[in-house]
Image 1 (cartoon, protein in one colour):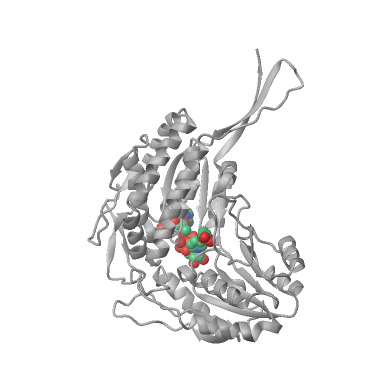
Image 2 (image 1 turned 180 degrees about the vertical axis):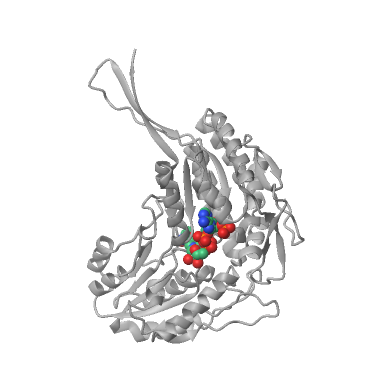
Length: 486
Ligand SMILES: NC(=O)C1=CN([C@@H]2O[C@H](COP(=O)(O)OP(=O)(O)OC[C@H]3O[C@@H](n4cnc5c(N)ncnc54)[C@H](OP(=O)(O)O)[C@@H]3O)[C@@H](O)[C@H]2O)C=CC1
Ligand SMILES: CCCCCC(=O)O
């Protein structure tokens, strides 16, 4: 594997072979830090290319499901070793392609290695239960079985971790996979697929088809032989995919946006809360579905918290993610860059006070750089308090009581992650019970998903299924109940 910035033509991976699209057309992937830098071209695939991938996956899955979990797991261990060996190169590709700082990209790639090893081990764990029948001469047991072909549609913000936390469980439980990555992170995804190719998975078990979401993503959602589709991305796209898959009786899982609250109680360690607001809200340029975007502070410590926050935010260095001194990279795409600017304008128009940043950071490379923005005097009815911005924008909101804080925290359509900073056990227990979020974090930032624990949201953030950890089994398998008499 060699990461170069020369113009490379990255191919699809179908039935164990790298191949060009029938369209002979490509989509280009460029660097958000330097939009004139071409990372490479990926295939602008057609429905015909996708059809080939589905046929290959169906044939491959028939053999793959007959292998033992241990045999499948041994291959995933090999993929993990190869990815680990190529970690620096994959991480550098990620930083160049979507802007995440190199330390974050290395951390994410290492997380991908750990995900592969976690699910490789799943191949040796039980896949059912013996249940006593009322007929004493019978044996009754449940047995988990694969779904068949699984479509995987992923976004650009975690171009290694998200595809792997979907593909690894799909594969270990005996499914075949077709990955359609976000175009803006497709070169990074190709580097991950290269690791599967080098590990020698059987033909057709893993397939990689790049192309427009409206063509290839849509094609996966529509295809009757794609038993299940797992998606992470925007609500608009996710809900469209869910409706499309449901209409044909398929299985789907959607992980979508968030508007995650961080509650700061007047009894907490303010410095820790400030660090969490900055790390949880602004790392990855605010482009995590688990990022904090609303900071809800009890009035007794509001001014002190704001002052500490502004002092720390003003120290943030915005720049190229490859440079060591950079803390926050560019927005991942031109569209995202423009979206963030739009929301900053809306926030000011609606009466919120921009107390720090939000200005474009000029660079010779014309990168999509923007200062972190902090708004004060934000009320819950404002657009920037309700809609996911997916950028480095923090909205400060003031409350009197913790009860009011929790009510405000729940006053959005989303319900992904939520944090409270407090030492008061009653505040903590009320928060755990009453917050509407799939991830509930105490004295810790809203971001920071651990691979061995269930991950997913409530309300508009999710289709209510859970990913990661043992929870992934629920989506990527179905169940047989066997009744056996001699
Ligand atoms: N919850 C999360 O983790 C994430 C949330 N987001 C949200 O999504 C917004 C836009 O980011 P983006 O990556 O463009 O998210 P999208 O939802 O637009 O894209 C996510 C994936 O879906 C594909 N896709 C797009 N249109 C369709 C379709 N009609 N049918 C099937 N698949 C489709 C995309 O392909 P392609 O890219 O080729 O169009 C991509 O692979 C962000 O501003 C943020 O709000 C984004 C990323 C992650
Ligand atoms: C798609 C969301 C990824 C969340 C990663 C994290 O919070 O660690």
